[in-house]
Structure formats: C-alpha cells, structure tokens
Image (tube, rainbow, N blue to C red; front, side, top):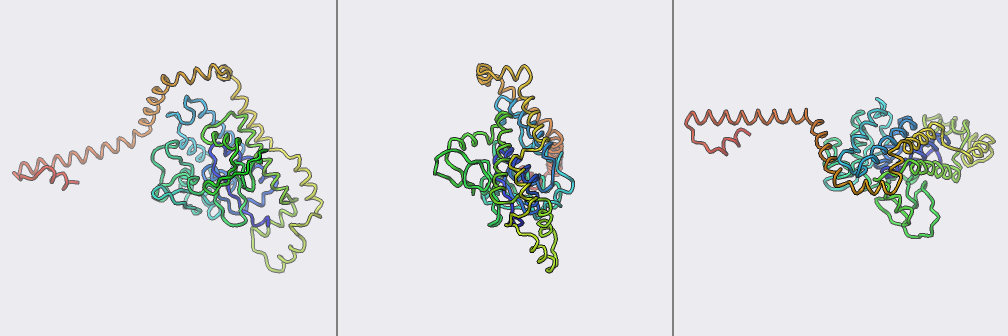
Length: 398
C-alpha cells in the first residue's frame, strides 16, 4: 500500500508553513512516498513542487519568513499597496527553482487551477519549460484583489487560485490528503473539541470550531513567527502520527526494496523473490522496529529549527519591535492609518510606474506612430480635395 500512495496538499495561504513540517517529516521518515505523484492547490502546489524538485527546505523557510516580516511591517499588513505577494513569490521561485524543474515534475506534479471565465477546475501536470512551470505556480497562487487585479495567463488562458474550485485535488483512492484545518483529511490537526459539524469547501473537509476560525483568519494575515513555528511543528507531529498509525516507517533495507518496485520494472522472477523477502505488513524486521521507536522522539532537523529561532529573534529584537509589542503603540499605529495610507498609495503607484516605464514607453511610441500616420493620411486626402468624413479616414487607417 505504501508504494502506491500519492500526496495532496491543501491551499492555505500563509498557513503553508504547516506543509513544511509535513514535508520535513516525509523526507526524514518516509522518502519512498515522494517518488509518486503529488498534487496541490495554492500554497499546497508550492509545497508539492518543492518536494519533487528536492529544493532546500531550510533556505526556503528562511525566505518565507522574510516575506512574512515584510507583510507584517506595513500599515495594512499584506493588503498594503506597497506589498505585492506575486512579486515575492516570483522572486523566491526564480531563486530556488532548478533549471530542469519542469523535467523533474512532468507527470508527477498536479496543480489545481480555476479557469477565470467559467470558474471550472483544471488540473495541469505537463510543463514545457521552467518558465511554463513558474507561470502555472503563479496562477495557482493568484487571489483576486489580494494578489492583483488581472489574473496571470497560462498557455494563453487566465487562471486563478485552485482553492476556489478544488482546494484538495484527489488523484485516486490512494491519495493521502494534507490540510492545516481540523477535519477529515488524512493528515490534519486534531483539536480537542466536541464539534460534530463539518463543511466541505472546495473538496476540503473543515470542522466548524473556534480553532479553525482562528486558522482561517491567518490565511491572508500572517501571525507572529512564534505562532508560525508552532504550526510547522504541528505539521511535523501530525505527519509522524500518520506514519506511525499506518506502519509506514521502515528501515533503509526495506525502503530500498520498496524503491526498487517504484523506480524500475523488475523481471517477474526477481519481483516474486523480492516479494517473498519483503512484506509491508510484517513487523518482524528489527531495524524497522528500532527506527519506529526512535521516531517516537523525533524532531525536525537542526537546519529548520535554526531558521525558526533566527526568525523569532529578529522579530523580537530592536527598539521598534519592542515598542509595538505594547497595545498602546499598536492602537496609535492603527489611528495613524488615515495619514500613512495615502503616502503608501502614492509610493506604490510611483513604484509601479517606474517598473512599467519600459512597457509604457513602447506603448506610447506605438500610439504616437499610429496618430502621426493617421494625421499624415488625412492631410494627403485633404490636399487632393477628397471630401471624405473624418471617421471614415480613421477607420480605414485602423
């Protein structure tokens, strides 16, 4: 059963740090699960791509906290005109995505997208180039208004966040679903609540509880680094509990046998011999038992823990951070919004104009050439004494 499992990560905005904990746990205790198809929506698609491309989770987590700190530093948080989440995503992906990423993920990465013009869900899994994959990931993370006005295009069609149509794509009956919201997903938080009511939103089971309401509020508004670190740790613990429950933690020898089945097609006689030596339901392997026992006290790698500690230290040090810890300072910051918001809007507008200057110049030059050409044609016809209506001349030139 373990060799047939696929993974599916739910879209969750800034709560995608939960997927980092799950990914770290899988890479440490169940790397054989990563040889198969992985699907996701929004932040889940980013997590799936990171796993398949074997990108450095420690460095990417550090970059994630950089984006969080930038979002939290503005007067309106991530909704500030000066904050552009799409630009942050593009810079991070261009920095960490390997040159052959599209070759590694073709047929394995399944990204959930929502087609803008009809709202239908589209799953894409084939990418012609690295830029093609980049564009698909940007489409998967585009939330109208929050990310911008016009959704990006993928193969000439505009798409937005797949969470609007299918937030937890299921590839087949062997798909392991991962969600940071308490519900009926295979890997998710288990809250100590007596709520029996669940809602199914875009194929994601969510329990109606106070804890989930708090999580929803943090999808677009990132909390403090300490809280994000606890979300990541919870993802690691939930994934580890899932692996224990399903007896998926194996020793190196058993993993190599499983990987043999996954990676290559073996001759029938060799396959039968391997099946005799290995039984996934058997618990007689001493190395496996020892590995599972050690996993009970498992913790995240030091590289990730160091990133968390650094992010927490940076958020707490400095005079300004100390000042804004107090409720009065935060209230004063909120009351100053009418004065600071216009300045933010002007600054953001000027920045966008500077970025768009090359495009604007090209567009103005094209318009100027068209206007001069039209004016020249009008003058020539007037000199010839042709009484042609002005609208007819302009229409002909267009």
